[in-house]
Amino acid sequence: QLQLRESGPGLLRPSETLSLTCAVSGAAISSSAYFWGWVRQPPGKGLEWIGSIYYSGSIFYNPSLESRVRISRDTSKNQFSLTVKSVRAADTAVYYCARGVSYSGYDHFFDSWGQGSLVTVSS
Amino acid sequence: SYDLTQPPSVSVSPGQTARITCSADSFLNQYTYWYQQKPGQAPVVVIYRDTERPSGIPERFSGSSSGTTGTLTITGVQPEDEADYYCQSGDNSGSSVVFGGGTKLTVL
Figure 1 (cartoon, rainbow over the protein chains, first blue to last red):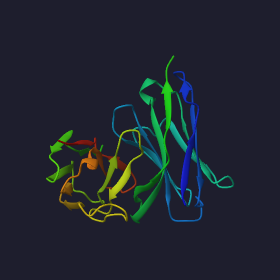
Figure 2: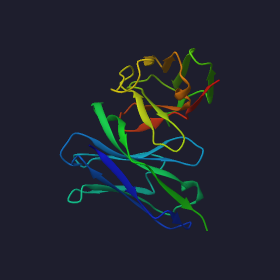
Figure 3: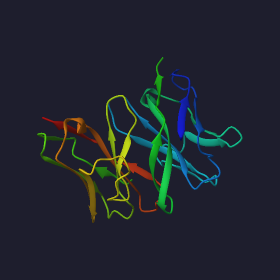
């Protein structure tokens, strides 16, 4: 049974760097044709895709966030990570990691999600 | 940027049909997907590849897509269907994921 679990700091001050990790069990992130992605949701607002890493290692980012975010993976630990530089109050959100499924090229949707990790940016 | 527009809210009485639209600013070249999200929970996909329903999702959920608009239809709405619904598609390159702004479905 696939499980994804986010872990992160919870509270950050403006200008700090956010680091989140998603531990995956029940599937190998490098051995199946899946995407592994990050989606965030500010309190009371909608979903925003941050980026996804393909099982091959190719990475895709939301153009509006690309300058501040980085997605990486550690296949030996079967986990992938998100880094957001220079955080500000607008980065306050629940951050979800999720598995992406594709039926056509790089177009993908998310069929399994973690429970989410609330990150608050405040001075 | 590529945008998907949803109505902020839709209200229906139990047993009625709810339709939630997702309008793109250009032709929908990629599939449309639909998620249901209840308070405090992660989203759950209810429709994928425009019209496909995952196992475990009730038959009352259906999807369609034509031109620049995708539509989620819930036939015979139940009280437990009250939730936020998000559409998702990809930009023309297929390498970016885009979410609609979400629609709050209220069951009166």
